[in-house]
Image 1 (cartoon, one colour):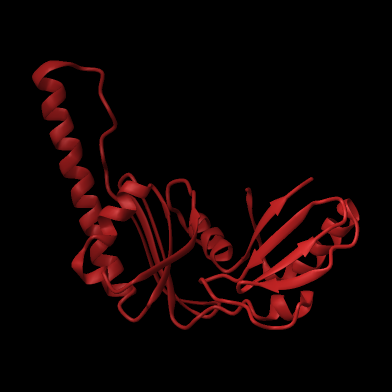
Image 2 (cartoon, one colour):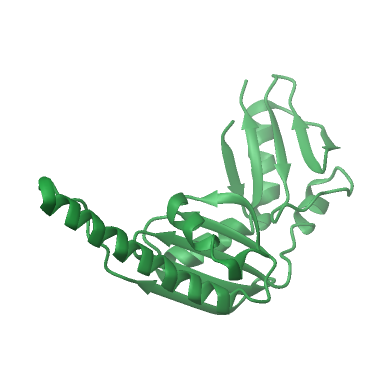
Length: 201
């Protein structure tokens, strides 16, 4: 079931487009989510960001208004050698750090040279993850909820740091390229978006 991230200000337009394609879709609140079902069998389930449960009226505007970000919360993006960490208060970016460390790519060489190369690459990746964890521990110290993305293995390695065990990772997982400021800004927007699963008949 595909997941669509819809910024709250665009929610009403998204609903209008769904209705235009599939016909009227009466809304209901089911298990903390907003569900819409059209007569043609198409339906969607929309959830609030930050794993929040919705218990308000089955109305488009009320659901969008409920998509408030906690204070504080964070974003952690990690890829090979690169990372971005941000702490936010609601929609305001309070502090962030973007870093890049060199991690060698793979080699086609064989034998002992390949083994030395692999050890060097593993050491570089470990040092890069440790640097990311250091900044994350400092920047996210007061945060409880964090949205993550990048490379799953690298993110898991950073979150394994004992200083970060209190963080609660919430959906969505963000498949991002190497973290840069523009990538971080887009990730922050995605993290705050409504999470909509759509089934088209």
